[in-house]
Image (tube, rainbow, N blue to C red; front, side, top):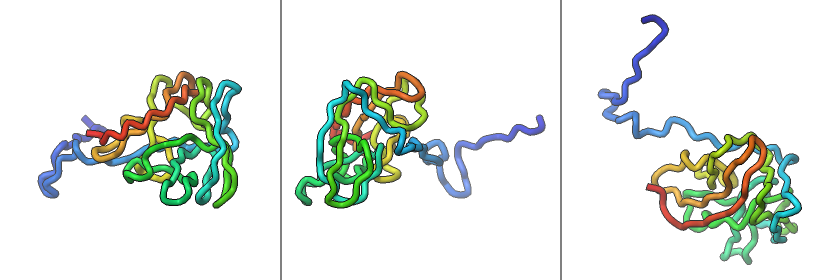
Length: 162
């Protein structure tokens, strides 16, 4: 058979089981200007503790006057998501976040039925829940019901992904 190549699950030379190696991580590509909360959303005002972009999940840093900073799933102190930023802000500027929204528009193309979580690859990013790796702290964010909208219902489990 030409054009078909065998995929080896174990690389004997490197002594690595390729089925256990993460070869890629796909975060959502968010268009900041397209991030929208519906009229049904629950919003909060916080103070940014650094540069934040619309669409980024943020946590409130207890060591820095509870200022909002980009959250990340592989750092224990930053994995508790307070909300998703609705606009950009710089250090010490007011920032509006959405904490719950049955008709949230995250500004990215979504897979219908997919559950999305806080990413570990980049601070402030969102990834499919299935992309979480062992040792990542699970913070579920939303479930997509169309290619552009999702039910935002943040669940900070505190559990470490197996």
